[in-house]
Length: 234
Image (tube, rainbow, N blue to C red; front, side):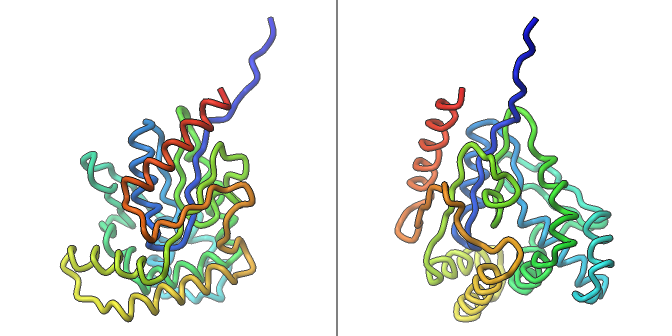
C-alpha cells in the first residue's frame, strides 16, 4: 500500500512594520479560515517587557537566551471579537506590551541571535492543522520560508502613527502624535537595518500599501489571494 505524502499544514504569513494593520488582518483571516493564529511580535514584546521587569542587561546574551526559553507566558482566548488575553508571569499584560518603549526594546532584543534561535522553535510549533496565519516581521523570510502565501503589509509612517494614536486614545491613554511618529520611525530604522533577520518583504511576497485603503478592502484582497493559493495547492 502506497504511503501518502506528508504535507505540512498551510501557513499564511503577514509581515510588515508596526501600525500597518497586519495584526487586525491576520486575526480576521484566521477567524474566516478557521486557522490558528500566531502573533510573533507579542513574543518579542513579552520578552522585552520581561527583560525590563527583571533589569536584565541587553548585552547579557546568556541571560536573554535563558529568559526566552523559559518565559512563563499564556494566551487566553476571550470573546470572538477581542484579542487574546496575554499573561506574563501571572500578570495580564495585553495592553502593557503595546507601549511604544516596549516596542523599541523588543526590536533591540530581537536583533540578538540567541533570542531569535530560542524563540524560533516556539513560533514554528504553532503550525498545526488545519493551518496557521502568522503575523510578524520575518515570518515569510525566516520562520516559514515555505509558506503557502506571503503578504507584506505596509503604510506611510504618518498613517501608521495616526492609527496607533486613535487606538491609544480610545483605550484612554494620553499620547502625543508627534512622539508616536518619532517612535515608529525609530522602530522602522532598527528593524530594517539590523544584521539579523531585517524587516523586508520576501522575494515572493504580495506587497500591499494600506495607506489609502480601509480594513475591509485590505482584508478582501488578502482573503482572495489566500483562497486562490490554497486552491492551487490542493
